[in-house]
Length: 355
Figure 1 (tube, rainbow, N blue to C red):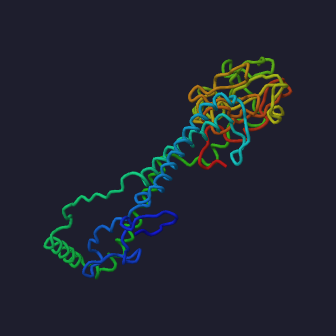
Figure 2: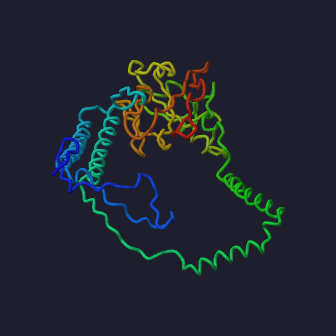
Figure 3: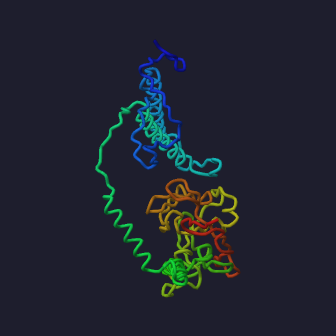
């Protein structure tokens, strides 16, 4: 004799027994709600009693593993399909590297497929046998428990905490205020940065000084294809705060052919093809110092973040999160290169409060 479950015939002998107890209720023993209720009756999974359901689960697991395989192949193919400098717009991420996006997407799907397949396999097809390991009671003997509670009551009575309200109130106040002293210790982490991370020494009229010659730079000092490092006028190596300021204000200049500059703002902020960008990598703050003349790419030697100086210094490879900030420059009446303002955005790595 058999009964129907869905569209499959399943033997009554394999069906779980009906439960008299309502779902969510607490089992009691002799009226004690804290008594050990024991293990509930084992409920068979549908895959344990229906081979067709087991086959469906098996196909689901296989499909997830197959998706992982396809994603892995896609990960490998991405290196061939997408050039390193191809930028695409993906909502809501904005303009990002097509290669980085495809690599991350394929790798994520590949790992998700393996993980999802393993979890579904374990939950539906692997053995569902429950094993019980008996343990000795961990509670104390009744005599010991009684002695502890008696000692506690006696101590509370002898302390007169219940009668001495002034002591009780002040004690609770002292205990409540004590953790606040820990906030003072946080001061040792350093003063609050306020808006110091958003500004550098660069300002309108500040001359660009060659880092190697210590002389102000003229446009003719920078040839096409060369890389020059500069610092703000007035910042000297023997200054007490030199390291702190140069870590934000370090500048690199490259001269490009104006026709090779793709980004309109970059062209407007340059002078005769000379573009000025922050030297501080937007990943973890390493100095960007490797320049490829043919591609106009600059490379950070720490983690290989690559930026395209002909297209707004956008990230085309590596872990950096955003483009290098550009400094707007021009030439003063004496023919020297000078800044027109500070960087439009904070330099270096992102921080938690950055807008």
